[in-house]
Image 1 (cartoon, rainbow, N blue to C red):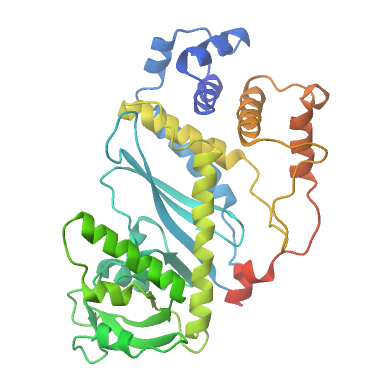
Image 2: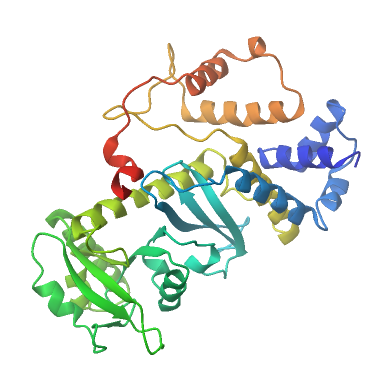
Length: 383
């Protein structure tokens, strides 16, 4: 291998959608390196994955803010996504992601094998942070670790996910609370039994779902129970009509309605993961070898971190079409992959780009100036 730069180029070219043989052929044609695909597999072994992980970590560290956003609190969305190797029947790798919705960018990324559980403790928390996650992160030990770091949490939970206690230490009757819940969101002071003498105090927010959404959830429960030859639990059917949120945010600054509005921002990390998988092909892992898989995944993350972050979408306006012509999804995906590959190996001048590539570049660099959606700005809800 001529240099570390050449090795990085080859790894990024492989992550952009080419096969190993195509990477070798293109590298030889552009004078980057001359080697066979078997030799490239050998070069990708050893500590190449750790080296790429360090590069991705440096790119992430360069994007982290020096100060908290407007409002004095940093909101961090946490989620994980499963990645399967070719022919796998279960999860091969799991990517754990922390996402900053205020700046619309990744804050931290951790890669584990398929047995790596989704935990808030995988990320570093500082005083003033607000960690938001779905029901898989509602674990007793995670609550204590977050509070010890001075961070607040907002997680969704199920009716039987945690053993809830009253402030006095007795069992909390969740079913009775759900039975007397009104239309407006309500709250209860609770503690989570984490096998410590003094569990941290929390708030349980009960928000009733719209009637049609509740019926859809109950219908799914009945269908799942029918497939398993069981009778659905009456407690599950009752809880299916509610959103249960567990939070440590102060009640004076974050009443129940505001907590529910804040939790609606969690869809943004779902969109970020969808972009990684659909546009960058993060879920199309081509390697079965653990060493090669880690090289490909870290190279794919480097590509994602090098791309410009998405800009805010204007209120009431969908993503605007490219000027003058319609661009299909597959044509857009092909243009993005080819553009990344050409930019890595031998970028041509802009006047030689295809017309749809010039239109896309002009649209990304000069978007229409409209007022952003105030209701979707996390800083509004934290200030």
